[in-house]
Image: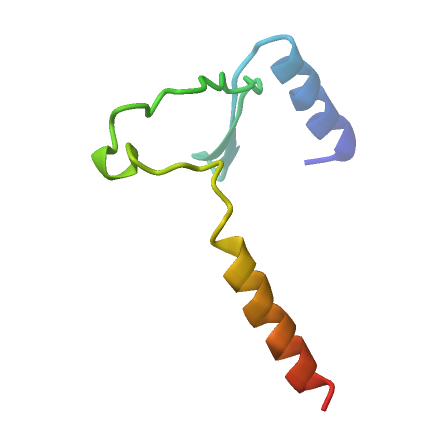
Length: 78
């Protein structure tokens, strides 16, 4: 396939056309238009019971994590 043929397939996809690419008469790829996925915030709300009581805004645990990290950095400098 040449660059020109590939560019033509891309243009076809932009126009909404799907194309099957074959090799020796057997399908090997499908060129389709890209559709941006729709992101729905809160889609999993209530579906993972273990996470219902988790406060994702609470970062108090990071104080200890930073202290541990600083300690590791100090030992690297020795």
